[in-house]
Image (cartoon, rainbow, N blue to C red; front, side):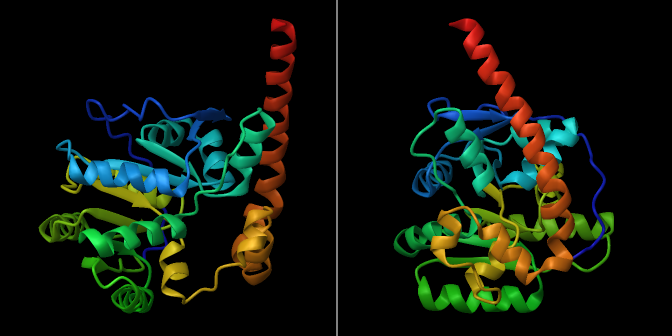
Length: 280
């Protein structure tokens, strides 16, 4: 997988791209719009888009505090992420922020759980997936896992990008290969924000119903990287578990960006409460 971060390309939003599900509860966090949905509701929308394609690729943003912080720092990225049909809270930070604003029954929607719920339904209904990202070893393990656990689900294809920037010709070939496979869902595992930029910059060329960036979820579902125990995630400390396993990778995000995000969130929440008191 390429290690170089892509440039932020401002591709004009397609007509109707920013038309989000209108009846879903949502919350604004540092300028980003996060939908308050469950894993099941998320997959309900994915299924509806597969069954009633609109002639364009729909997007799902799946991220927690990291994506919120990146979007807060970069208005162009925030516009791109907010342009997705769904932005779901993969992480405890948006859940806590919603609860502090009086929203109840809010839950995390991790990318790995979205994948598992989709594969479970796909095993019954014959949906297909294409996987872009991860290493060849991870993709091979993922395909073996899916064949054993979800035999009715079809793997339309997979591709592990090289550890270098791809050429324009290679990029066209990759997109053509994805389109030729005709998957119902394109799963992209390049990490935030790279995966969401990759999808956005190719929206006008992707002939698939749905594209979803899920970060490290390929490895979690494949079992090549252990997921934290469920009770740790439910109480909001999955980030601690992951940090202890990969401190060299996550130290800056968790120890520098994390406190900065919490400070800005606290300032925003204090302003919201002050405004509410003035309106009384």
